Length: 431
Image (cartoon, rainbow, N blue to C red; front, side):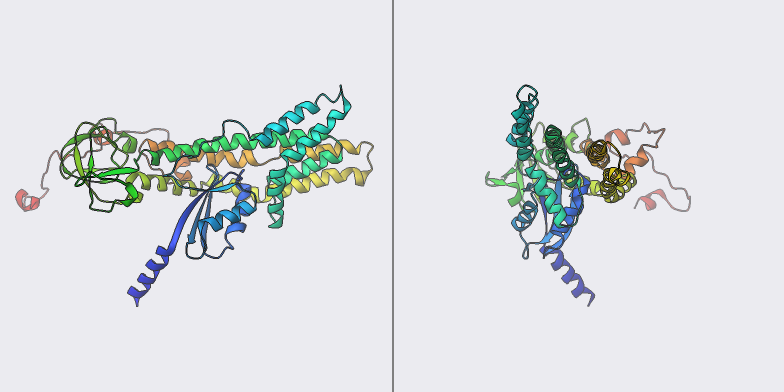
């Protein structure tokens, strides 16, 4: 009975597929509840993870029940600007310039500032709001339909209030600055994504079969296939050298500064450089299970393992946005209750609170810093298992290293062997 259950478990695990999506609509962790409410109810979705710094959504799903395209459609219905992503594919390059909508919004806002010379120019500010507010409004409506408060709703309330007070330029400034901030945030996250993707881009996508000289895609190479690697080429798949000898530069994977000599029966790893000799390598893993692919997954898993500081901030943000809306509502209602002489200043104060209390900087600071630290460590050959470990490292005052060469070279050598008991002969113990 135990064997049958084990087989059933393996079958269930085999049918699940992990898909990666770039979601540019992720501004900060306040969008996580919205994404979870969109995807988790879908039939076939088992698990949803959101990596905020790289704007990546990882979905474990039954591909026979729901496809990648179905998940993509669900995300884009909420105007989250999602696309299918794979580390092995070309890196998405962040746009150097803002979108035409942001540029048009900024140009119209600039023209509206000359309203003192020609009064009708003030309506250009309204046009600027109309052009720039659309993506914010669509995401805000999607959040409201799922009973979720996020930064987009704060911005919509602030813009609506400014227009109600006829401060059209103020409304346009809110829209323009918010959309520019989103663009800058997207560029920053793309740099983090590019850093992660560069780990995988180190590995070539083609391999040469040793027997026939045929060039094939690395995904088509099976285990125990012999491939040829010439001098100056990057090793495409993990394996063992079966013929030839060379020196291999492994600094991209381990951080080791000196080339490592390789000969028959020596292990070699994907993304390392064969420097000066021809070698034949028998593969010991599939391309997707190479050391560099595992490193990338470990960094990804470490990022999903949140530190105590990050968990505290994330738990606070669940209540932060609703609290800001409530406080702003209380401030705006004060003149109605107390009948003060200048109610307009109170309404403006409430709108300033909505804009200035944007939680994005707070909730993005910790995950971005953690992600960059984990990525930098991985590229130096250090695998750190999460933010909690990083926070522990920050408390270290002194580090002591030995001078035997084991740390710098990573090679252990037996210098002396002795038996502590005279009753056991040295040769017997060695045997």
